[in-house]
Length: 441
Image 1: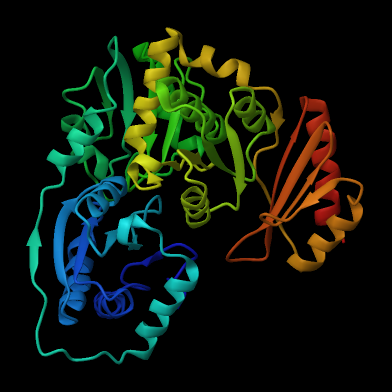
Image 2 (image 1 turned 180 degrees about the vertical axis):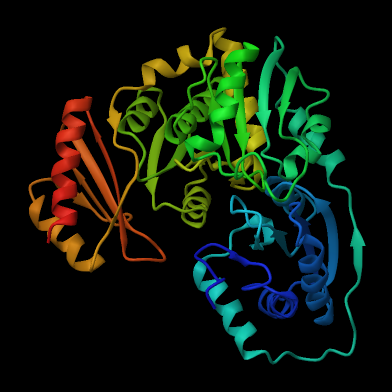
């Protein structure tokens, strides 16, 4: 089944994901998790009601009691699941995908992620389509998660001055509640695309792509705002825009969050970053007495390492930022207020905070189709055998003044290159050399 991805279940509705399949997924999830109480939240896509009804019918048919928290962000689902000690949970969402898509993002007790091998077992149960008949059905009830979640966020939102923040929710679910969530905080919100519209008429809810933050970047400058933020479709990714309309890279944002937590009194701790992160991140963390652990790309790997190391925070280039305070899961609200507290403490602009951290020049992620992933990786190993090599995720090769990572796609014969060097000419020289090895067998 092609809708079972590496980290979630996702597909076009109804071509790939329909009512019957959602019902079977509900029954399979009930059997796999063995849960008594299942928490369900959703974004605001047009297929939400159909999928919600079918999924929860499947859960209840297997005797599971369902608690519906309505239309929320994924971080709110994670917080509520851990706070109220649910056995498992699911967010009905297709995250940043276009409006025709939808899907399911499952999590275990304490908001622990569901890795691919577990999703594959759920897939096998769906395909087998043979479920026990219990002779009774589970119940369904509703719960308002916002009072407890607002109290949780309020503990981090004290600031010495007010901040003007432009917020682009991309016509997705966060526009339904962010104004109320931030109402009693020291933020003057300039809303952009808060109106819910599952067709996403202004841009796709994927802030990682520059075209989707173009309006926000202009608006931040026009409003003379302190900063801007863009959220994805289910609110578990956030990208920051400084007062000059410049978008921050995800690894630099992770560094800011870590230093912000330290300045708030957290002491010394471990930070988990994805293996594509700039050398500057590790260097600066060490300069401040913090340790840095590099991880494979992907939330299940980072969350697992954070739990193992008892890390206080972590982050990815994709805009996912993880906090021990939210059960080692993403929380865009904590990311925002952690950075604002740092601005507050240092009494500076966001661009001034970031400038000393931009020590190197990065290529950005460059994709190359290849005939054979394995043979291409072996060719790269051989050509760059004089570098320090590691295989945390694909292949990383390090030299004193530059380094690169090449990792395969999960779904197609594709290699993704990320490279960093001391300056632009060096970056371009090394980039072209590595690409030549990748693309010319």
